[in-house]
Image: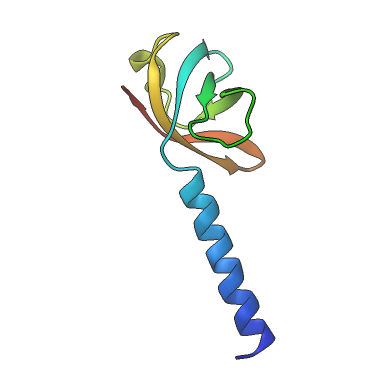
Length: 96
């Protein structure tokens, strides 16, 4: 197998693993800013070995403005995010 073929397979696996790792994250909505089109979520990191903190708070852009009607501060959610045009954006969110 050529070096290019091995590199292509490795790159494909890396992208697939990154997509899988970002799917199904859980957290708590800590802020909703409809004017700026963003939601802040305190991300829960479960089962991380060596982690002293189980949470990480991040601000996300929202693709679908209707989500502002469905969520309130303090809601537990599962979500996925992706960087779109340089902005960390919620691609899927579901209230628990």
